[in-house]
Length: 371
Image 1 (spheres, rainbow, N blue to C red):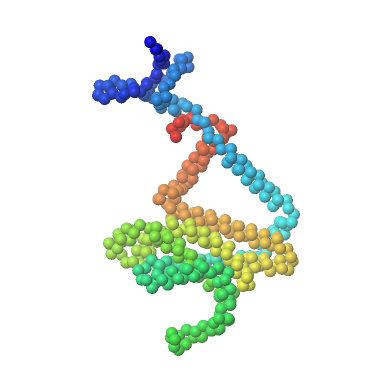
Image 2: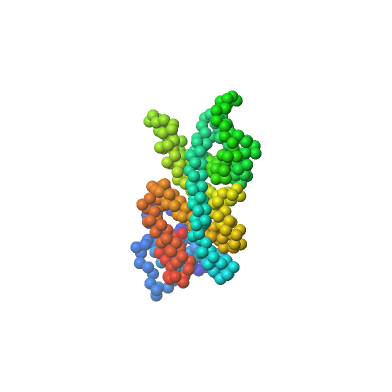
């Protein structure tokens, strides 16, 4: 007669589960966390493959960190390349950092910086006012307003900003005079275009119209992100359309508008450098005027570059705080909880680093096997 050798199993699950209530009560269950752990001298009993480990065994298991050699190798390579870049910037004498420091606070450079800041602020303010109106036209029920606003956005987004600047700067070649009066009738006021459109005005008008086209799409996307039920509830309370847009829809659309608007602001600050082609003495053109006299091209370009880096960094910091202000109460780290959220994120990153780099110390074992 054939014999089979069997091993004792710890809490083995029966092949055919019982179907009666008494059998269910008497059926052996898994070991609960209150069971005493097996001693070190106790012989190990082979475990059946269909038995799951207990919670105590899971919590006492050793956490094996996940190895990512490819990511660490690529990170190390990037750090080496960054160190090489910093080294060449500091050791290459052709950059002439002493000359950069001499011209960094020169009066003509500061004058060009002031014009750049003024042009950026004026263009963004007027462009966004016009963009909000265009966005409202695109969202209106009037087909004429929708068609005109769509045509404006399509045309202005299709023409490069530099071409627009050149067009407005050379407008006198197409329209020598601009007149105001009755349409197709008597003219009351006539102005010569050559005397009206200077370089600064042409830059202001061209960049403002370009910003209005892009900002209208940003505002329209933010408005569409608001639940239509908000406007319907306001209408049920008897509020007018204008007040609903200003007090209800637009504030809720700001969290979606601010990030894209911040990017547009930083892009416009850098885009003001193209006004140098029409002899507007901005930051870049001021540097060009200087190096055309002393032929120190690279140091003067570095002066303008450093100023652009400083300004964009300040704008990025301001964008961060504005985003946090409008995101308060939304669970995204805004408002008063921003500091605690940032601290929690920092602690979480430290836990991840400790789990992946054994060099930092012993890894956590209280969550082993639960993922």
